[in-house]
Image (cartoon, rainbow, N blue to C red):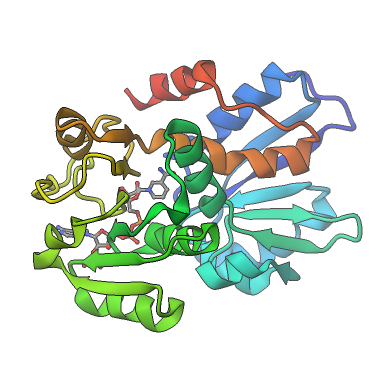
Length: 280
Ligand SMILES: NC(=O)c1ccc[n+]([C@@H]2O[C@H](COP(=O)([O-])OP(=O)(O)OC[C@H]3O[C@@H](n4cnc5c(N)ncnc54)[C@H](OP(=O)(O)O)[C@@H]3O)[C@@H](O)[C@H]2O)c1
């Protein structure tokens, strides 16, 4: 990295931040495109969030990504927030505009859909989607599916009340399923997405009978440690197209990089390998 005095600066707010892969990912693109710029991990305590965030325009930052636990606080502290981020209830990407305003959006929905489209022939209108989980990632994914035109989104969550709350909020194209009935919800589904932490390194495996899932359905696990989760292995063994979670992470970074640094960066095999090396 060789910065001039005109370098464009962006970064990521989180607490803690050491686990974040975003500096590595954006650093790869900065090198690849020879950008005079930097992307910095910013460890910001929750109590310091508003002060640090509001200082970004004065410091000349082009913008930032926002990760746990600040995504809701970012939404509350932006000057403008786009409609999709407002529905998701969280901001993960902020651009400082020419007038010094903090403009918030949420690129997790874009990253999720773009990854599916690039890695499979899935299209939203084809039929019902089943989403396992009703946490933060699920909110972005349910909104993404509805905005993409999914006719029905079935949400199965261990804590039923959280799935019910999604239905109250997101409307009649969503339904809540009992966690114990998750295997039944798979009949006639065209997409199954795991957004729970089950199957992740250090967590319990996801226990799911796939026998009712049509063979044409696409199975996407957004867990990416490990990359090939037991769910994806089981689904591939019975002939379903499978999509791993790394692509969502990579594609969600694209819009921010383009706005801060002025280049539309490519997600390709070299980037995947570079980020994967760090996950091993
Ligand atoms: N690929 C990507 O770019 C990407 C992006 C974001 C997140 N992720 C991954 O997605 C996963 C979820 O993240 P998140 O931020 O949504 O987390 P979160 O808000 O904490 O939600 C966790 C979800 O997992 C469920 N869950 C946890 N333990 C369970 C168990 N033993 N049995 C059944 N359900 C269980 C929770 O159900 P309850 O409501 O019942 O607690 C909840 O629905 C993580 O693995 C994360 O790494 C990936």
